[in-house]
Length: 333
Image 1 (cartoon, rainbow, N blue to C red):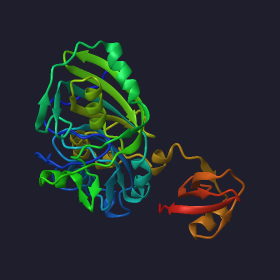
Image 2 (image 1 turned 90 degrees about the horizontal axis):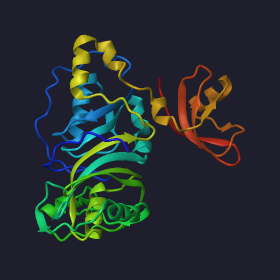
Image 3 (image 1 turned 60 degrees about the vertical axis):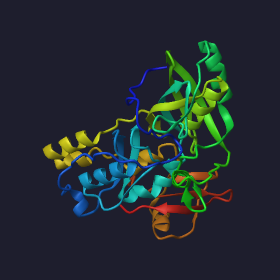
């Protein structure tokens, strides 16, 4: 497994399953871009490398201001200390944000053995400190294997999951008794990259809703000493397996030099649908989809992205067993 850069220890980190806000100094971006957002609107997907120190929402707002976009949304929160891939959708691309939220994700994580905290990460209050047993790498890997696959996980009480419409972390901060209900999640890989003293460097690939903090907590308990997450970086989100991420600083420099080049940093909507099969229509079929008329074609059941003869993306939708196509979302060029 390759090694990945991680943020320094200290402060609250985020994982695959929730958002807790704790903001620090925002990066100054200057006045908004005066590019094509003034006319047809900014449209596309930005693969943002979220910096440490600001929330996902703050990063979104700064990116939105940089591009002069009117409409934007991100696809899965990272807490202030965490870094890495935060896909940001602008304009029509926001229509596929919900599909990216449920995508498979990968993380580089770091944890410390021997210390358990109430938040399961390094920003929480220490609950207990225990001696770390003399366990070898194979013993650790054996416990990691038990936390791989379709598993039942109890999320941290300091999470964005809601109970009675209120996030659990808000209830916990108020001193209320909080119990997070267990749920099934998918962990595809949970691998040990390196051990240095009581610190483990880990690689995690998981499905939507998985809490890396909980994985680390459960690993520590299995080893008999406890553990907490100290750093986290999101490496990729399907279908962006080898993302060329842009930092806010890089985007700011690009805009200063060439506003048109800034918009060239955006990927087309189709990039977020790369794993969807393509349904290419003739002029009549494209006109039917564009006007919401029933479309009957010969194709296997499933989800499709629909393209006009020109190649333009028209819609995404479902094909049933009878060949009837139902539009889920349509796109305006």
